[in-house]
Length: 333
Ligand code: TXA
Ligand code: MG
Image 1: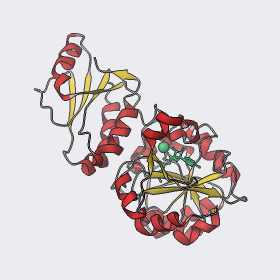
Image 2: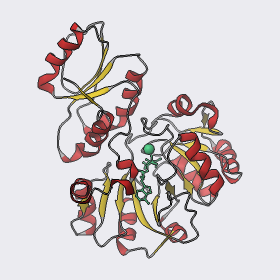
Image 3: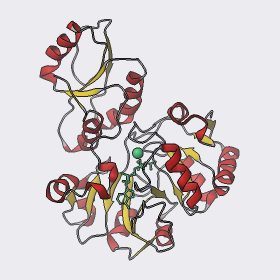
Image 4: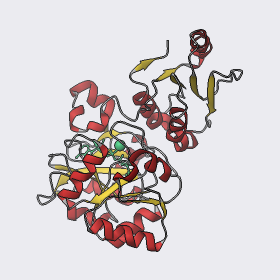
């Protein structure tokens, strides 16, 4: 399916397709989503089929404003309203108790639901025209890298999607922060551009983060996106510390391996066995192009992709999380 420039006519057509239970890929500020009418169980089943995603992995329902929360969630805590008014439209997904009439297909059988208002003019125009919730996981095959450009969706899903709205490259490039508000203390389930510290500042309380949850209770099954193998290129990918890169590259060269390198600050001499992409030093710019760079290296038929370790500071948490998942199956040395 060729992407179509998302003008008014295209958005109108996309709305009709959604109303008919068909699938429309659309841009958000984070990544492209594979959208379907969230109130249509048959359309939702099709999303899982196209993505090859296990049906117990819940989807995020995209809505056009905080007023829509009550259409999908019940027993909405004050914290949800505070966070929505601080960060929406934006890359923050709230987990709330679902209303009883929300199809269990959307929530993977759970009684909780993920909701977010995206900050992208195309996504918002589509939501406003459609006037309902649009369930949309990232528009990639299960466990692969999320698409950040319309052409990525075309390469990945081909004709199994009914329309791809092209709204350019996503400006954030990393999936939304997910926060669970169903318990007594909010839990950060997936790090994103909006950080734990920012959320705590708005709520005025400390929240629990994913690492603490995993260490203490290992509840990863509840939020399957937290599974350690996720967001991975097909080519084996490994994380490598700056100081070890020279030795690792020499070793791979001796073995005649074709290597891809996402370099952060490392500057080796170019050689014909290596495809190197130099990444930006700022976390936000790095995140914006991380997935498209991994896709580019993945298309070069390489033996291994090395990713140079990035700084371990707050603003890099979401990026380091995705890099860790992309490289969880292989070691560099
Ligand atoms: O930025 C984003 O969030 C993008 C764009 C398209 O909005 N969407 C996205 O969707 O990343 P997806 O399906 O790739 O990831 C959704 C994550 C999964 O990790 C899923 O487990 C979690 O949200 N999730 C959804 N509903 C949940 C629930 N009720 N409880 C816990 N986790 C939930
Ligand atoms: Mg995804």
